Length: 172
Ligand SMILES: [Fe+2]
Image 1 (cartoon, protein in one colour):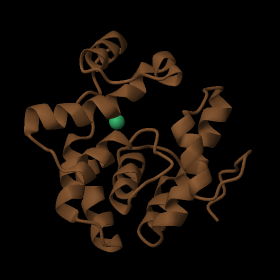
Image 2: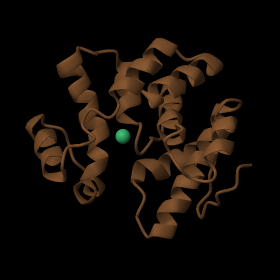
Image 3: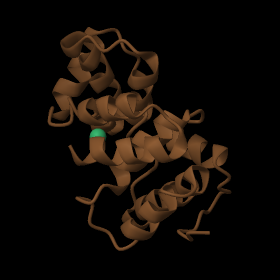
Image 4: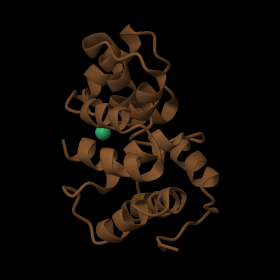
């Protein structure tokens, strides 16, 4: 619900469709509680390709599987909504404003507890592109500190939004 509300707010500010943003926000985590084996099994059952990063980090599959479940269980077939659900966790090289709105809402909703959240949320309310860059930088910085590798899609998104290799967590 928090993600849906935040996505709605950001969509209104940035000219994306608030109804689609709310819908993606409501449904983005449909597969989030599935254990790793079930995520892989359900993706394989549907003939979805699973890349090497996803095999090692099955949790990220909840985003793409969630989009399938939204179609199957809630008859959501709007490609814009499904794309936003698919990209909400690791982002992607190509992201629509709606994709960005849902990605940022998921990462910056008030239930997330990290020091930079408020500043990033304020940035998201004024500049979508800058907020994507700063939020991706923050995520990559976190992953690096924790010794967790980033998904190739996240690195591609970082490039799209103007982050060089060896990113900092600056909010510039
Ligand atoms: Fe998620």
